[in-house]
Image (cartoon, rainbow, N blue to C red):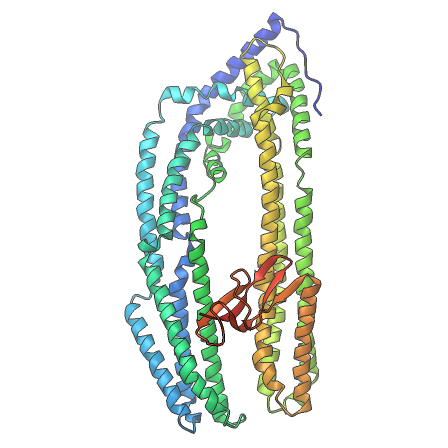
Length: 613
């Protein structure tokens, strides 16, 4: 496990060497320690500016209620423009009057919103910036007070002896850069904790303020607007839209009036569904607020930033270090060689026990599985493209060619998106593997050598000539090292799984889910046609959907399709709308709008449903 512990003869010559080494290290440390201290303080001030930038974009999803409202108003405008453009096609009453009535209602909603939105800026974002600036001012005042307490000479001098083992570790011609960075790390044991405490306290207060809806009236305001608009849309759907759909049953489906009405109703349905999804997203945000971290950055990241400010490049040139180092190496040749061998044995043992090989395998497996699934979906969608392009001249003569062409164009976009988004997998894999490599290189022997260095300092300042390396394995530093490595190992595995699941949801299942809507709305209309060519195209589309589901099933991904009267489950279902229905009990599902998907026990995408209230 460990190399042979060195044994040294206790004689006056060796004792003198120890004294000379200690004096050399101490004097040189005192020469630069005050400069390191000053640069660390300046680095903390720089971190204030970085923190300001982090705070100014913190909780960006909280700005969405306003953005969703703006999107909704743009949808209202599109619907009204479509009504204005196409109303000449409305040949009969009362369809014409109903549409004009809907346009009037939407115009009123547009006017009310625009009266409150004269500035054209996101009020939620402005509100957030004001809260952030106030927090930064409080932090700056607290930091100045702390800084004035840490400038005494005695406070600085006490670090001189603590860096002796770091200077002694010049056994492999350790550069001045490593020496100064080690010195800054020793200072961090006392100094960085206090600075970070002030930083974190103010960050915590700011984040709590940002997450407190009582102090964020703009979020509540636009969320309420969104919910009120959703209720208004629901009322229009139940009354006016229902009436129009009933009248459309008597229209000629090939006539201009029917096509104009259908186009506007499609816009209305999309607006309704998007608004429901927006409300669901905001509700999820509200539910997650209490889980937000109270730290704007981790302690390790904070310390790394400050230590970088006190790096060797900022403190002194390498040439300035050479004279002291050469003198030290000349005295300590034998001593440092034995010490180095023991530290290497200790570090290699620890690293061998904490390999990241399993993490690398899992990251690559997630990437390979998702690439294969994306390729399978792309090839399946491609069957529609091939069929259309081979039979385009024949399909053009069909009455429903506009619908067929629309399906073809949408599927082509899906194929392009699948191809482009596949590149994200390689980027994610590279990022995760880089994180793993950083963990391996970032900790590696440093933690173990630190533990041994603590023991070495005790030996150097004592009269005992035999450093006790075996005690390092029982030290708290070593135990903490092993625990930290395990946590990093588990964290990387968890991150890889979450990234893989997120990719499936955002870039793969999204394409399948939106294709399901095409099946439900467009393909179902084609199946009502009388032309064999139209029915053949519809069957191709249906077969493609079944093949998509089969491909997902081979990857253990199955649809979530609750039946009417099934009970609502928050884990697997998302309510787009709740309504009263005498045939259903409270909490029962009335209708499935879009399928969800899960892989084994993990719900990747919840099913969209209408539930009874």
